[in-house]
Length: 116
Image (tube, rainbow, N blue to C red; front, top):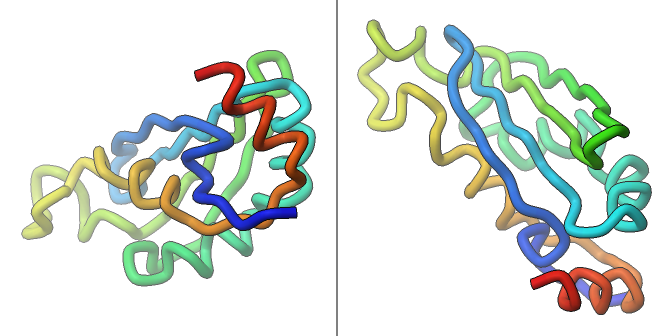
């Protein structure tokens, strides 16, 4: 096992959904997706993003594309048209989450490196 940034195992996209941001985390390899399904829980994302997300975190599994989708409710200060936040559309939320430290098996880290 080694501690790496989530960015080494996955890539991501994010945007806004009203007052919530939508963060997609896409595994770099199918085996990594199975690992992330176990490790990257809604509770863990909520704890890591608590400085941004004031509401509940919902997680959706997209097995067909090897991705997890998280909705961070109450994370945009009311949404794009009413918020005073610099990033009222949540475009940087995936980048923030991808900087999370995660303990991963060496063989998965190697598989991720092979896909870059």
